[in-house]
View 1 (cartoon, rainbow, N blue to C red):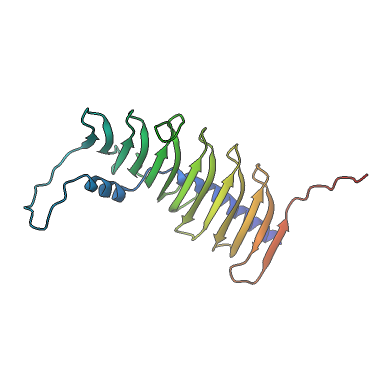
View 2: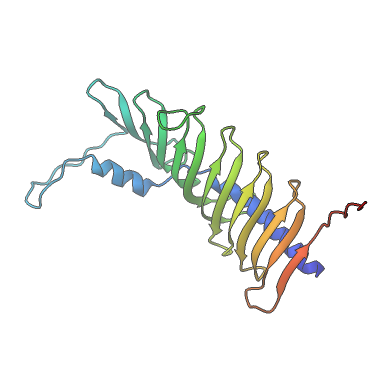
Length: 222
């Protein structure tokens, strides 16, 4: 069983690296759609209009308060940011500043969610780092920026899964389908990256797993 445990350990490490994917900013296609929704509706008989070229576009209230801002990013691509009536960010869709990902981000610290103005959740796709190739995923973080939940799909390897974290941001459990290691199931960890249990089966149904990788000593009975 040792090779199986090693492969499961590698799978968990790969899932942990995949959480970097969840730091996304996102969805230029959605940004264009949302921008287009603000434009006047033209009938089929409307005369053609010349293109309008600009580097930045703001949607404002009658008093000049910016509610949404569409602009280009330094490394290419564009993003659309939404603000509340106090100018606090609520959401962002488009491409990230480093041009490595696209999707949707939501922020706290505004009229909808209390907080300090950090990203609290997101969904999107992009190029990976730390060994994770590329894929799509989502993530939720707590009020101090610690990851608490993430899921995703590595489009190169076919690995898909979901991970749960504790208050320290450490992986404590998850579920996945791992094509490379012929496994689907659940795992738990002790908060230090050590597997505590694995429950699942091979994708070809040739084996099942119910492993307690570390057993706590039984207490003495009086």
